[in-house]
Image (tube, rainbow, N blue to C red; front, side, top):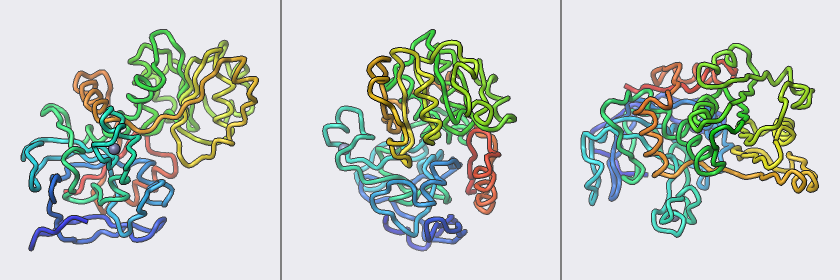
Length: 353
Ligand SMILES: [Zn+2]
């Protein structure tokens, strides 16, 4: 826990028990310690990862409580801790989600999501962005161009950054490939569709809700599939005349994973991003793995160099952030209810001020 700034306070949402309510409280304003910066939060993303964290489903090393949730921060640096020279006061920034050491062999290789001394998650193991101010390690605050809207920018740290890592670095999506995205209307999904399309792929989008599916062609999906309608069908019966080169699963349910594997073309790759499912949920006989020369791979978050690239893609209009609903601190509980009911398209955002 950071030190406090004498006399100064802030409003914040506090989680006191996993699965419990968020309390709107007046707290001491945190002061940045050595190597840290304080950000005045303009907006902080609201999506399923935060919901998993608040329910205790994130594999958080410290399980800190009470905690201020929220990790997709966009704001302005307004105080520097000892030893920090950048980002400077007044710099617009977004935050990266993982608290990493910066010096192990994976951090030095630009693969800090694999950090050997991983300290946890912003908003779960350290207080996050559902507050007027947040303190983060300076290395976690990444500069944002002046032209980018701060609410839209809340989609970059996770909802856009994660697809960058999947499509470019892990799966290496190529022009002309076919890519299946499950959970495609969600916060990460709608940006995964865009990222795969931006790589030149034909994108097939799978989700559960017709109204939200109908919006996905605007973001680059050429085919939309309703899970309730295709769950009992083979991919061929569902209209996929040939297999997909890459299937990206954001759902993590056994039946969906199995459907993704069945949909793979020869030489195809299944990418799993969920951490709350056991992989024995994917019953793949080894002869199918061999005969298809299939690859099953995991993808974990996104490195900071990739986030800088993701910022560029948004700045150039290649990826359009989808933050469809916003609320103030008091309205967050209701927006989480809409998220859990499957009514939120793309991401939401909490605006603390
Ligand atoms: Zn490290």
